[in-house]
Structures are given as structure tokens and as C-alpha cells.
Amino acid sequence: MNSVSPFGRAEGNALCNVGFFLIESFSMMAFVSALEPLRIANRMSGQSLYDWQVISEDGRPVMPTNGVTEVPAMYSIDNAPDFEVLFVCGAFDPLDYRSPRVFSWLNHLARNNTCLGGVDTGSHVLARAGLLKDKRCTIHWENMQGFVSEFADLKASHEIYEYDSYRLTCAGGTAAMDMMLYFIEQQQGLELAASVSDVLIHPNIRHGHHPQRMSVEARTGVRHAGLLECIELMEANLEQPLTPSELSTMINVSKRQLERLFRRYLHSTPARYYLSLRLNEAKRLLEQSSMPIIDVAISCGFNSAGHFSYRYRSYFGVSPRTARSRATRGTSEIAAAV
Picture 1 (cartoon, rainbow, N blue to C red):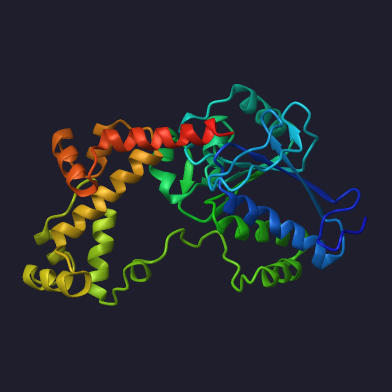
Picture 2: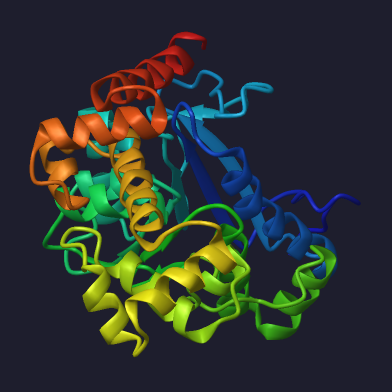
């Protein structure tokens, strides 16, 4: 096996060739988190275990969401070499991405037994190409609602990554690092994966079953068990909100005590806090899904578009329609800038 450069780049043929297909407005954080473990695995082993190439649809550079600099592509989909593994790094808003050429190319790779991965919203692209049928998969939690709405028949989970027979998907962000450490462990063993993790100052390799989001306790700073249970109930019941009486009964406190807990720990009332959860979820759906606005309203517990619009405007200062148009315009501006 060939040696590697001092930085860990493969010199000559590598054991495994990995492709990264980048789509405009991809997440730089997720891309780098997926790529760097491969480089470090080469450096720590002193062997050319992995080589990697960047591909774009037309071979031109691709702009990430941070807009700092374009990432050069080494190949287009027309002249890309064969890979053992190809990861799709999806767009910030994957809902409008519909490229028959790319879908055809991905299906060609699948027929040739290439392991296909989805990083962040890359899962959305694989699903739209028909490549996640009967496969366990995951996607970033912000995109989950829109994902399951469009692909209700898929086995989508909230885990940080999933591996199911030649399909490897992750939620993005640092979950891509854990996915690649798992990938390295499966190919080269735990010792090398642990060494790579140490170099990355990543002391705990997370396995797929870890939740994507922080616990309610970590997100809110609340330590009161009853209040934490109440917040969890609220988050789990956005479409059909529970009444204050139902909440207090379910956590075995009086309504008055529930009010006192919210004032003491969250400086709010149960009703106001619950409304903020529903409206922030509506904001995510408007920005991260193509659900009709009335469906967004219903899924967040509002029975009429008028009431939803009034509450949304009062909270965010803009109407739901304006919020959606701004999100769409923002994605278009990123594409136009490249």
C-alpha cells in the first residue's frame, strides 16, 4: 500500500476511494466533519487507506452556506471516476432540488454496488432519487417533518446516523464525524477509529442511537423533574396542544403550582411557553419544508390560517407568507451568487 503525505493525503492508489458530491448551499461543517477523519486515518496509520474527490454536477466550484469561499470540484458527474463510497452533501433547502441527471447518476452508482451516503440533507436527495426504499435512514432534525411528509413510507429515524445495506446517512453537523468514525472502525478496527477521534479532540465516539438534540434539561437549564416532564409533554404534543389542566394532572401538580414553576424557572406562563414552542416549530417548517401554510398551521396546533397568521405576526413581526418567501429568496440568492 502506498505511503501518505505528512498531512495525510494519499499518495498513489488508496484502499478505498470516497467521493463527496456537493450541492449549492451545502453545510461546510458537515462536509469537513465527514472528510477530515479520512485524512487523519491515513496520517495515523501511515498508509493510503482513503483517497477522496469532490464532485459537482457540472464540475464547477460549489458555494457552501457560510459563503466564505467556493469549494473546487475535481470532477463533474459526467467524468467522475468509480468510488467505493459516495456521500451526497445536500443543500440548505433540499425541497426544490430536482435534477434528473443527478438522480440517474446516483442510480447508476447504486447498480454498481457503490455505497451511497447522505450528509445532512443529502438524505433528501437520495430519497427523491428512490434510493432509500426499505432502508433505515435519518436526516437533520430541522428537516425531519418535511422529510417524513414527503416520504411517509421510508424508515426515517431521529438517530444521529444510520447504516443499512449500502446506505449510510447522518443528521449533519458533527454527526458526520461520528458516522465516519464508525465507517473507519468497520473497515480498520476500533483502535484506529479511537486514535482518529483523539486527534479530533472528540473524546466520546457517539453511536447511531444517540439523540440528535440536547436534552430538555441541557437546553433550558431547568432541573425540576416535574417541569422537565411538562416541557417534554408540550414538545411531544404540538399538533394537538394539551390544556393546562391536562398538563398539571399528567405531572401530578395543581394548575397554580404549574404556573409558579413556569414563572420561577422560565419567567413565563405555561400558555405563553407552549405557544412559543408551537410558533418556533412553525417557523422551522416554513423555512425547511414545502408544506402548505395551512398544513403548517394545523401541524402546530392552529385550527385556522387567520389565527395562525395573527399569532405568527405578533410573535415574529412578519406574516407566515413573508417568512416563507424570505427563506425561498435566501436560497435563491445563494444559488445566484455562484
